[in-house]
Length: 112
Ligand SMILES: [Zn+2]
Image 1 (cartoon, rainbow, N blue to C red):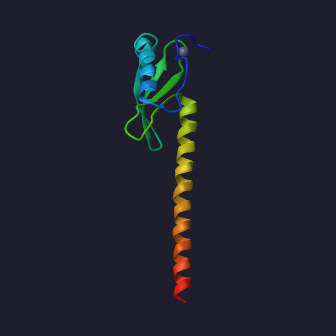
Image 2 (cartoon, rainbow, N blue to C red; image 1 turned 60 degrees about the horizontal axis):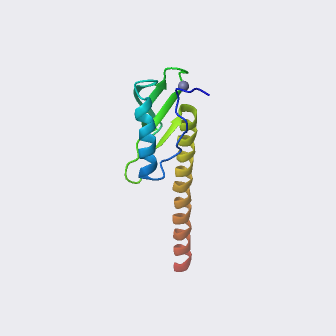
């Protein structure tokens, strides 16, 4: 494992204190071993991309904001998380459509 990189990944920041803990580590590494690359976009997600100058690992950071809990992950794990979230979101949408459809069928039947 690369020593210049971050010790751990955050699938989401569970609390503000966890985000502060992350920020401390982030501050100690940013500009020394890890550098900002660009603001990236993947599907509907936007994030900041950082790169380790020692091993070239890309890290994606999304700041927590109100209900959004953010994340800090290696690129491939961030992509997987976003893909999963999007799939879950779609399942929810279709689930709601099916329920609405069943209610309408029920209403039509009750009027007949
Ligand atoms: Zn590294």
